[in-house]
Length: 432
Image (cartoon, rainbow, N blue to C red; front, top):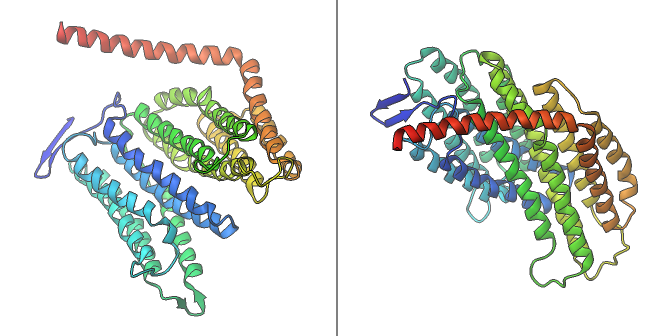
């Protein structure tokens, strides 16, 4: 049965051919602002603690997005009561993004941001759980598993509420430290439960939909790096210079290289593997390769965006000589972001394809060895050196894996053509 009707309205189950709809893409627009907000707030505190706080917020919001994905792959969120759930979730998620600057602070001007964040997190996660539970009312085994996954949510939100209510000093520990500890425990519980609780009766209706949505969120992350390149130019009150234009071109080129690294070979191959894997093996693959191993890549893109902004800002400044090395942590951030992205992608490739691309291992080793040199070089030379390694990686893989790329692309094109021909035939039979 594809259709479920009850007091709350009509729900339709997703099918193997389900694709992302406009409501889901609209929902992802909130995460454009989420990534932007995390990057902007973290850029104000580029210390280990500031970066760690940014990672904690990203981890919790990423878990919210993934819980949304689980439901979106089970039912068609654009139909029935789906939008009535998605819109409040969007508002709550956007509210979290708005209060990220005060997420670890205490009460400010009568507004208790940590407590509001806990309330919004509960709204986002609880609405998804309730909708999923309601849609599975004819499947008691799945309902029990959904309730099992709701238990960690109760623990997590309890910790977040405690973090929001703690006083300025708690047994000699300042509120930020204690709040950070509680958030860390909450993240460990959520991700630990997702990894170790049973998924034996979960369903993945459409492998194509699952892969497509994760590819779209990677695009959102890549978009954040492009936005940061633009913001680094100091859009107002600037004087255009050739170093600024060259730096922005190199920054966008680095982002394009990471797009290519993700989408050129591994993404279409992963798509085929997901379609060829079934039942419990597919669920575990979707969880490990996408939910868990995409988080480091998203975190890497935020690090890269921080580094881009720092470096392009210096190249756009009239007051810093062109021969001056990058001031601040821009070089470690931009190099570290690219390295972490490639490492995350290698882990993703190893999990879903069982292979490792040696050219990327080489690129990671080269970039790591170049960081000590990059921090003493002029900023333009440092970003140029990073871009050169990224471009070399792209060119080498195009040449070395030319035959594999051709076979894979022909297979993907054939699959797309068959799907398009069937759709064309269906429309012709229906409307002509």
